[in-house]
Image (tube, rainbow, N blue to C red; front, side):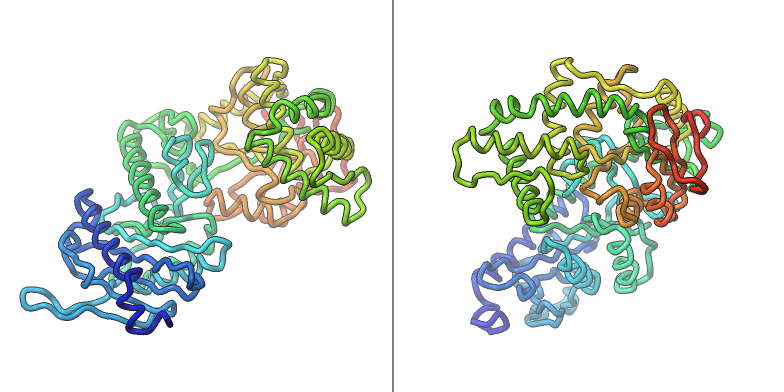
Length: 498
């Protein structure tokens, strides 16, 4: 039956969704999130027989005591936002029914998020969320366990939540919300200054979980700030004022937004360490690693990723690509994988499938103390200096994020990860493509790409970053390759020159 028919509107799926929203509103009221009739929730009616874009939307009403709502108080809307069902009016002192003032924002979020691979089925507006008074475009926090509860983020990542300005009427926030979602494509929340927060997820469970995680993170950030500690840096050390002296105060915009993004090979670390130590270790260990871990979910994922890359290489006639038998014996598959990995390493391929497997192999090497990361002598002092000045430092390398953390966590100068705010790898894009640096800019939440300094030894990477608007310096280290004449970039031989 059609989703707009009376029979469907009275179906168990619609009724269950209405009851769910009423239950969630009572729960959030008890948490103090939706008091004073504030806040609203919308959830799509989940029905596998109906395509996601055609699923109906159930939305809570406006101006209603959230803890007393019943399922018959809910509105049902079409995917385009037209009202298909509205509740009956109740006698005084109840107000006439009115759909949520958040309705236009909810529908805009549904519309924009459905352009992405996932479909977003649950959206929450909390009017009583903590509001940050920093005059910046985003709230940044890193190295908190609860960040893992935010979709697409891990403990080491920097979570950026965009902030938009409040208006007298919620519907007037629609354009600002749309701009924030466009500017921060990975975000699942938008803060509204002096108002609250909008949160969404790919199911009501995801939206609820993320709301709880965001609340924890915001509360932790406020408490850290009250203690004079910086929630936006990995160590959560004392807040730094512009001259570098610790103190309990608010950041200025400039001090909060300076970022440095560093390449590894030929920039922080000698090329020889990568080519003469890490690559041979991975090449010599790949067969043993696959043999010992073959049946684990992690290695099966590595094999699946490598298989897809090899198939693409065979179709494109890439030299060294060897077919992997789809139904072969374990030893046959491993032998084919080893041959392909050796060819990829020899060609210095910058591909995610290879880098992911190498990271897992190197992890074993670092755990067994068979490997130790190497950085140039000036790197630790520079990282410490930038950290003291409140400058956030990130790594962008073709090596996997796991491999990056392993290297900086086990260096010849000890664990340097406390000075690093996050890690980027080729999952954001190829390092020689401008769009990769645009993606990094959006992830860091800066107002202007020029607030980011990128340091690399590769001319093509420098050119791509410059095209994205970043400041760029080329690192000249022993063993690095030659640069083109008249390349036009500033060069340094030590980080201490920055």
